[in-house]
Image (cartoon, rainbow over all chains, first blue to last red; front, side, top):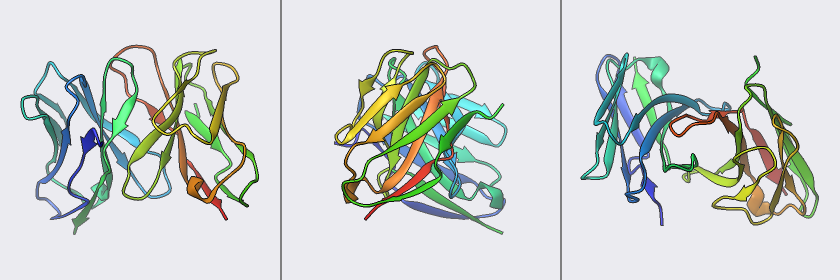
Length: 111
Length: 113
């Protein structure tokens, strides 16, 4: 039973356009959500997070939206750049600090 | 400040062999974690240590043991490797507090023949 799901294995967008990556979760006890970015042969690196008391968090070109009633979060990247091409993982946590990861979405940004 | 380091980077084992994956962090974090990443499955938690002296099972602990040697180091041991343990293994650490991200090492790619 996958508690965090990223239903799109891959996404391709043109440079300069918006990238939208989606994530769904099932456990209502999750209260903290994170996005990680991963390049090949490297470890995941933290990108942005949001707590359940907020519905939006912005950091430069990256914005995360949380819809608690739908148990859905999304990551928007505007404008997308070729260097953004990577695998993006969403993760969710309850107050234990442990993370449950989605399967990942591979983003390709074409020049 | 090296962050989270893992050794070795690559390893090939035969079925039944044992080995220990090493992880160290220099950020004075209390919590440390071991994950495995398999194609199409994201990262799955094997074991974690919320603080020095404690360890707990994660989602997929079977076939593994861990040791929290001190605050800096957290090792993962495969006593009798199996082909199903072929994976990329990541160690992570996290500072105290409820809303803090985990910091990951570069990974160990393990192949069991």
